[in-house]
Image 1 (cartoon, rainbow, N blue to C red):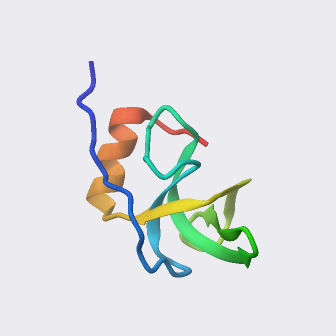
Image 2: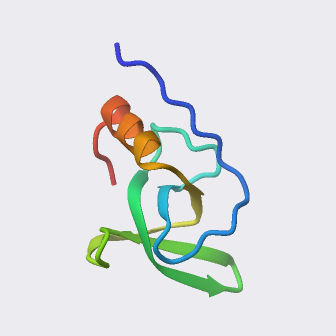
Length: 88
């Protein structure tokens, strides 16, 4: 069994280009939809903020958007991906 990786989600000032763990829900549960990547677009509307996640040079990984994001380091991202695989 793989060791769990704990990344606490919370309010942060996320900007385009930040490396993040983006999740559907604010609890950062790895069993819910999530994505590790770079913020390529930030959409602000009356319901809140939506983060579009892509690769380093702006290429979109998918068309899904996430309401929650947490800045992470490359090492945290590698640990998360090693523990939970790739998921979108």
